[in-house]
Length: 241
Image 1: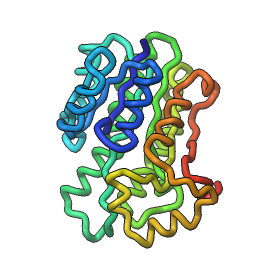
Image 2: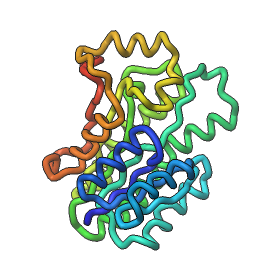
Image 3: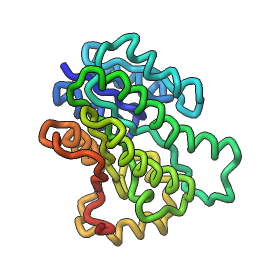
Image 4: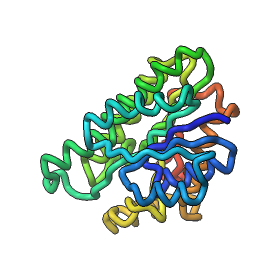
């Protein structure tokens, strides 16, 4: 049974990815700062297919020890899904110093350390492995939340660089969602920005977390074995690029 790490596993895209991955036959290692959400997942699926760990990636020490602690319990892992993220939906002028540090840690620094620590261990096996980073259309076309947009643009750059760094054994791709309904982020997006996203969509069925999870599982599948360093949009055709 192949094993996946999913960060931000308790809610939204992360939870949908956990659920669909288990249904597809993977063993999932899920992490989130939401202990109650992780407990609910464990209650539903059990520890035969799910291992959960509470982790808050605003903390530097947690970021740096996360992968070593996972490998103390698991010998080898097939894929890392870097999904955890922060979105405030507010002006850069409204950010506190602590909020600046937190969003940089969760949205970018955690991906740097988790990715390199995962790849360093898995490249030794000289077998196919995967990293999927969750970016955002905000990293491609901009965001009213400048720090969110900046970190997601950096995620895209990190994805492309690490596709080179970790080749030939670890494929690294980004999935870039646009307006995703039924998530905590959706309610924080200013109304005018939500309306603009919706106006740009040429397919009109609302994108739900499960729709993004479907693409994540496709990206880590053998069907995508020749694809690395790419940004894969999930956006109902908005912002053609």
